[in-house]
Image 1 (cartoon, helix red, strand yellow):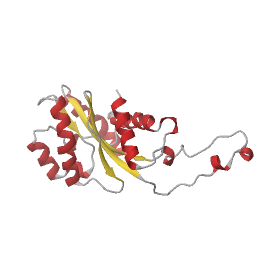
Image 2: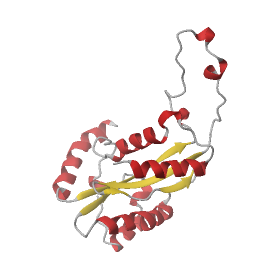
Image 3: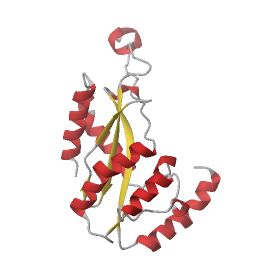
Length: 197
């Protein structure tokens, strides 16, 4: 958090609470998943009481610098989780792609769980999320959303989807699970999402 973001976070969160206290927040976000979880700092080490006797397979691992990954988009609320949207690594979510995701994944989720006035959509502050065409789309579908001027930046404690990603990754890579390919990774992610509360 920058100093300015830190100063603005409290008042913006308060304004959001005052405006939307009777509504459920529907929060969306995206995260990357790799074939194995060893590409994160801290998961690439080994522990041994005797380094000299530790086999080379534990000490040295071949690792691609930019291994295969998949981008996963989800929306969550107190009523559940949307279907995941998968994108190949390296394909950014611009405003056109984001509108398609909202239409194909957010709309069905909202229609399944909510009536008008019961929720507010809370995107993060990515520029594509507040593009004029995206805002026009949300308004045309009567989807209330948090305006950018009161949307606080970098408040992971207020956005439970950040914890959701951690819990989901813990389940996906449980017991050092590794995928052989992207399709297997997608299936594993879907299975683990279906098992999360």
